[in-house]
Length: 269
Image 1 (cartoon, rainbow, N blue to C red):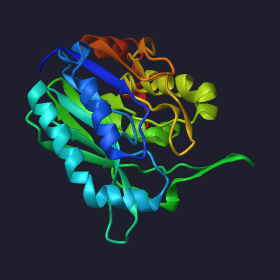
Image 2: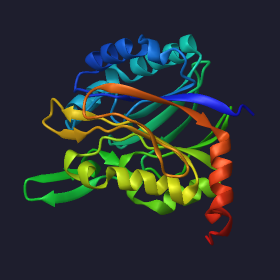
Image 3: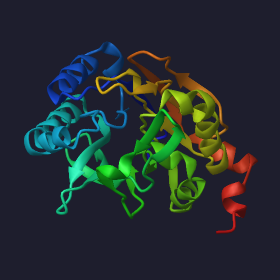
């Protein structure tokens, strides 16, 4: 097993137009910073950022496979694993699953995860979100075998459910991905604390690429994509604009953190 690798998290301001999002990613993938990346993580809703069922349906009919093929070709060309933070995957009941997809360095889909905890919240009288209007909840955990160890997949609002991550870690995850489109309101209060907590309590690296800025549908997301080590230290962080961050990931750091604080060994499930 390889002991070190480089991870990159892209921070995007995705739109309701898939063609625009593909162009944005094309430019991002061509930057020098991306060339040495072993794992590239994209945010939630990276392929289409929309609450419109009509536009989501159009994406599924006309862009889903186009987007997936685009990512597969990039992964193969760059010899990198690429995590599609999420895109809508249509079900037979005409609703969708918010699906995260991992593509390997050969351009093959190796696993996927359907978001279990949907974002249905009423923050105040002027700000509410009903993800279940268009999406159904997933049912299963998902892990992937990377050359460096096991990766546990999750999406955004899952972050608030620590039991999900304990189960992933108990199944062998030493890295966690949390692609997100965190609202600005909740992000400024909770994002950093929750991400660091998930890293600390599981002795895992956390890779959290995020959406940022004001989107075409009027939503404002927090940004601050972040990479956190198993001791809870922030080793790379973006601001509130479109950008990318990367970090050298050391497997030894996981072993050291779990040796110093053996909570994974002592945890009673």
